[in-house]
Image (tube, rainbow, N blue to C red; front, side):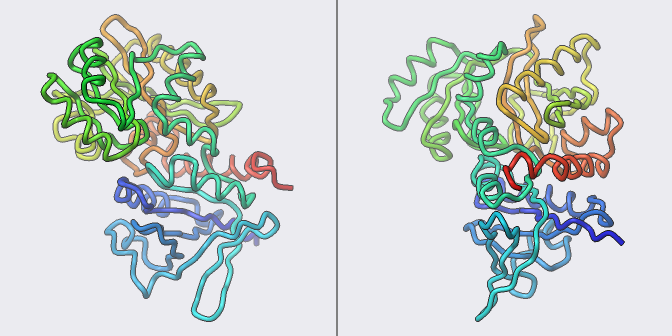
Length: 358
C-alpha cells in the first residue's frame, strides 16, 4: 500500500486576516484526499508562534485550536536534504517528514512571500505562488506597474509615505477627483481601505491606511463593477467561470466579502461570452506578468464603456467551500475536492524542480 504524502498545512498567522485563514484551512483540511495526503496542521498564533496541532479540526474553525493539550511548539527545518518539521518538546526534539507545504495564510507574514521564502529555502515543494510573485502581488503599486507594462489597463494612482504632508496628498486627490480610494499598499481583505467621497474625509482615511502599512495608495474610482477570474496552473493555465460582484452601494469591503449583507456574487458574471473570454485572457496575461504559479485570483473592473481595468491579484484567495475562487472553479465543472487534488498533484509534479531541489 502506498503511503500518503505528508502535507504541511499552515494556518492562522501574525496577520489581520488570521480569522479568515482559520476558515480556509478548516475547509482545506476537511476536503483533501486523505488516502493520498496526510495533513500536518501547523498553526501560527497571532503573535507569530508556531505549533504542530493534533486536535480536532473543528477547533480550528472555532478558534479554539491554541491550547496546551493539542499543540506542540515547532519549527520548519531549513535543511534541503531533510524536509522535516521539528517538534520542540521539553528536553528533546522530535521530527516529522514533510513532502509538500501549503500555506493557507492570508495577508502579511503569510501571503507576501515571507513564509514562501522559508519553505523554498528548505527545498520543500510549495503549493501556490513563490516568493517573488507573492511579494509583488501583495504590493498593489508594483503589481500595477508590471501589469501596465504587460499591456493591462490600470487605475490612475500615486503612492505616499508617512513623511508626505496631508496637503501634498490632498493636491493629488483634487487632481483625480472624488470619490477615490485610499489604500495601504500592502494589505488584504480590504483592511485599511476607505472610499472617500469628499475632501473632509481624507485625513481620517489616510490615518487608517497608515495603520496598516508605511506606504499608502490614492487611487481613482473606476465606474462599473468588479469581476474576478480564478486561474490555475503554470505553463498551461485553466480558468474558472468569471464572477461578478453586485453592490448595493459603497465598495466590497471586509464585511461584504465575508457576509454579503447588501451585495451578491453572480457566477457566471452577467456579461456576454465574448467579454468573459476577454476577461479570462486579461487575467492570464496579468498572472504571467507577475510570475504567478499554482493558483491565484485576478480581480478586475469592467467600466460602462466595456474597459477592463486591473484591480489586484490574490495569491492565496479565500478557500472555504463558499469562497469566490472555489466557486468560480465549481461553475467551470471542477469541484472543491478535485480542485485541491489538482493543486496538490501539480505541486508534486513540478514543485521539487521549481524549488531547485535535487
